[in-house]
Amino acid sequence: MAATGASTDVIIIGAGPVGLFAVFQLGLARLKAHAVDILDRPGGQCAELYPEKPIYDIPGLPVCTGQELTDRLLEQIRPFEPVFHFGEMAAALGKTKQGQWQLTTDTGITITAPVLVIAAGGGSFVPKRPPIPGIEAYEGRSVFYAVRRIEEFRGRHIVIAGGGDSALDWTVNLAPIASSLTLLHRRPEFRAAPDTVRKMRELESQGLVRFELGQPVGLKGANGTLEAVAIKRMDGSAGEIAADTLLPFFGLTMKLGPIAHFGLNLNENLIPVDTEKFETGTEGIFAIGDINTYPGKLKLILSGFHEAALMAQAAHRYVHPDKPLRFQYTTSSSELQRLLKVA
Image 1 (spheres, rainbow, N blue to C red):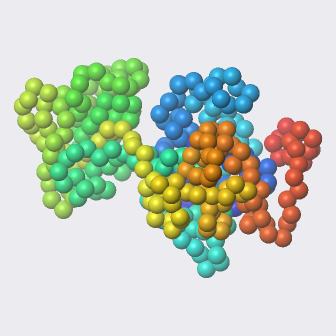
Image 2: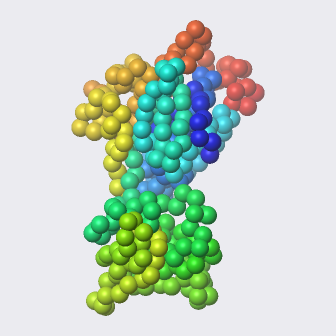
């Protein structure tokens, strides 16, 4: 991850397949890119929601999974050395005195560039908030929906709620540094990788993890400082777990998020674009993939790839207005082959 205050040629919001292919097309145009994604890894919806689901309509690949497609795209863009900011939500957008776009993430990272590309699919993956009264007052101080910096949880008394991969992964990773850790789930079965479940059970046998069958129903504390999590056990009894930290992992939902407040014209939470450059109504801001809309739009990964190619040509004009971009084919251009490190 780059430091606060980074600058580049193009900022990409979204590291799904279309965002990754945009890195490739921008690279062919000699443009550097930083990509921001709220998820902790690349691949977007493909990798997060259906990593093992087969995809049949990618040109040249009769069948591949979402994860395989992500891996191939990452291999393809490796020569261009993009910078990724994972676990970061694009929170605010402004302009510098020099007229460049400045994107600020929810953790305070700022990135400036002449061009912004929104490749956010259906929007941001937003954690599902559990239906606990007053939980908002604790968010950001005692309640967290993601682990951004593991050291911030050292010595804490932690309750992790959930039974999927995120809940089990962080149980295994945080148990060695927490003062206490309780895993709370409403069923004895888990929706996580068997090896991770095995590791959790080993930690439980060592006394580093306590497992409770139940779900959180209330929080006790004041001024955002948590003291205990009230729970309802599956046998109907009530209880409390002393804790200063709650990590609820109840899955993700799709929302447009802060992008809705970037000042763009929206049409039913989609961003209208032209079909020449896939530029929005705001100069220097492009939208590609499922987030955009135009007459005849098909929500296909293939369509997003096409949009990324035309976007990159137009983006070059913003970054290098006095330097014409000569169109070349990768099959015949030794210059492009050197860029791709295949010459």
